[in-house]
Figure 1 (cartoon, rainbow, N blue to C red):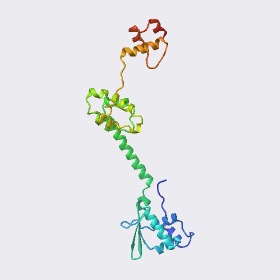
Figure 2: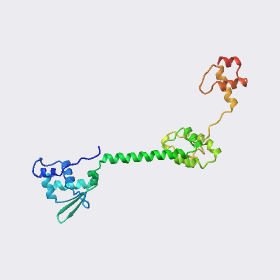
Figure 3: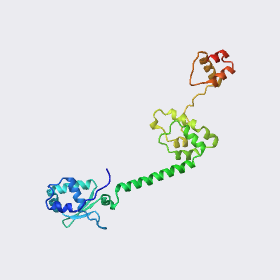
Figure 4: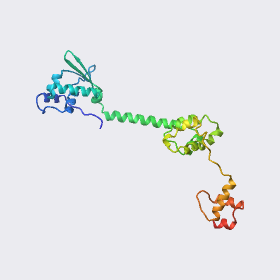
Length: 249
């Protein structure tokens, strides 16, 4: 929960007059410190008091006041100085609690709106920078992880047009060799260091051998998503299957 509420300092007067039960809890003591802090320029967030005065206000023993102040200092909520038996407390981020009259939620919303606008504008600018060939390359990648598109594009541009047309396949060969994707390099580093080099390339079956395998499946009446009418027609044209087998398939 964020934001703040305004409290009148008359609460301190009521407290001194015994209108609230003591001893106070530590939360109430912290609120009292915020109310005691000076709000004027040059002294904002500063409390000039004594440990005895705080003990009386809180209804505590002086030893408990000391422990409370030390713990609050350790939590980085305040800075403490002593001067001639006076205790000078400075509330850290005092303006955050006061809000300077502007709701914290409003400030956060304004900042969020500005950040979203900057992000949208940046994405729009980036889209106008990328080439069509890079966009095709980027879409063909089987795994991108958290890679920066802009950094990848900067490395992609260093390759000539002929090599660019093969990069998606090369990067995917590297990707397929990585079993645990948490160890996958960012795409820009894959491109920069040619990470696919040294990886055994998949063997490509000669076309005629592939067609022979398809022809054998057609003869058995096997249907598969790995081949279709185009491959079946090619088998027929090369006399690997008969017209009857083709029609039956």
